[in-house]
Length: 256
Image (cartoon, rainbow, N blue to C red; front, top):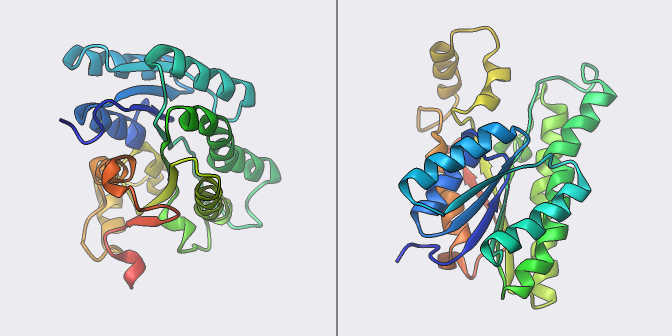
């Protein structure tokens, strides 16, 4: 038996990076997974690759996570495809650097719509179906940048800090109403995914990753699977007494 055997998961931003690693790990441990992404062709291709190994375990759907109506439809489609929903992983996100003065209001709004508003929408529309299925687990992907601020991450710091606190509010609300739904946030440090491209800039990627690794006590940038294993724990019944928590996958940087 896998650690999430018999459960149905919905993972956003699953065409690449963390979302893809999380989807693969959940499927490997017994779940059926609806993978969504604004890159419709990419997420469907990744779902097909998963199904080539474990048939019928993954479906790829197009989704703009800032679109409220699409969230309603994706949750409904998930229930129709796999007859339930037990795990929601709000992973989709974007990032860019900039101080408050350097960040345009349009960019500020765009980042918050993708990184924060999507989490609100996902939880709002998934919770009723999860409750009807007997409960489950919400895992919201925040960032260590939601805990440790940077001078040139104004918008990203703001959105990711809000994701962490929103997760606590959701956890308390679901505990109070007896939904049997837990909600936790995961806070990774630098992980080797495409979202690092903004930090890497025009530098040679290997050199840039080495520079980032020197900031981390464990001496390396994280792998997507480092986060996927953490999400698996929070999604599984192993964490049945864990809610409203911040799981830091940060190589020790927040201990400094």
